[in-house]
Image (cartoon, rainbow, N blue to C red; front, side, top):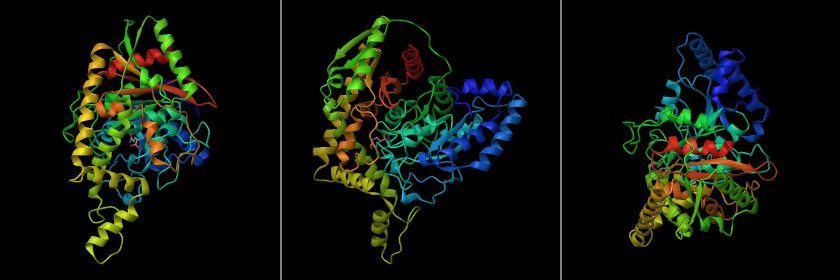
Amino acid sequence: MKNYVSLKEIQTDILARNTSCYKLVEGYLDNIAQQSDINAFIEVYKSEALEQAIEIDKKIKNRTAGKLAGLIVGIKDNICYKNHHSSAASKMLRGFKSTYSATVVDRLIEEDAIILGRLNCDEFAMGSSNEKSIYGPTKNPINKLYVPGGSSGASAAAVRANFCQLALGTDTGGSIRQPAAFCGVIGLKPTYGLVSRHGLIAFASSFDQIGPLAKSIDDIRIVMNVISGIDEYDSTCIGKKMDLEEIDNDKQKTFAVFKEALNFSGLNKSVKTKFKQTITKLEEKGHIIKYIDLPLLEHLVPTYYILTTAEASSNLSRYDGIKYGYQTKSKSIDELISISRTEGFGKEVQRRILLGTYVLSAGYYDAYYTKAQKIRSLIQSQVKSILSENNYILIPTTPNLPFKIGQKNTNPTQLYYEDVFTVMANLSGHPAVSFPVGEVENGFSASAQLIGEFFSESDLLSCAKKIINN
Ligand code: GLN
């Protein structure tokens, strides 16, 4: 089956009768079956998707189809879909069926997108390699010995392997952008509050955002137009619906680049080279690059892990083995709760619950949690001030290229440092889009992210598109 770059191409082909929704679904199902070892889709809704395809093909004929007709989507396993399983790749939620759909899922379906199935991820979206899942690791389609990144690793892998046209992932500290980078696709972490979190299995509520991974900026934009905007079920969702406009201007722009990021000791050489080439191209186009200091860079990862584990320990306290989810057999209620949680949660999730409970405990609250909150507001005000003097921040997405499955399994903090360039946008709430800036080795690409003002996605995506096309 053709590997379409954008939905526009698909819709043109459908209108020219070169393909149909039905054929597309069949094609993706074929691709998934042929490379099932990638382990991206943990469940496909085969007959349902084919039935929907027939319906939508009829609508296209009658000219009553929605904006997303022809778009076949995969959703991360922490996004709920009514009457379907959602497990956040955890034993704790194995067998759980949601009684309602996430707002994003409802909105996609209203515009005639087809949900093909659910995608693997790190348990409760905690991880950077998609290795920590009850379904086993997902492989990177570029080279199957390597991780696809995480936690939305399978979302990126599925897009890259042409298992679906677009995937939804979630980004708490980089989980859309880092796997997008590892698989050479595009990923957007929207402004906090632009996309509803209703129906998302919570990890760290003041950080989590749902966003798209795709092969083109156009697809990211079209889907954002549909899923973004105020939702009565999520009071933190305050952003207006994104409008279709693509902003096309060649005005001179200023890009802030952090000296600490460029000189970061763990920055891979080829990533650095490609990043510098991107900067040179921007300068050649007449844009201004300002090299600025961000001494806080070394505090970003610790701050992120204190705050997100604190929120996770609170959010995950709902899994008590009683209301829903995994339940062990025991006669005592205390034991039932404790053993259900011990058996239901994986090691990394338990580690974070422990850490989060510790930083929230009476004796340590001020030393860790309050301090981290203070650093968070400092970061927020610094990013705001940088963006008041510059149009964008440009930063590599990841310090490293993909690593081999199993290679970084032993030391959790080593993996935490993979997030050094991504967590800033979640700490501050700003939107960030990651896109490839050139192939480096073994088919892997280096990627960069562009960070912009709150709710400036229209502009941010237009700028990213220009950089990609240059
Ligand atoms: N790698 C980060 C973590 O493990 C990011 C996770 C995410 O964005 N969901 O916390």
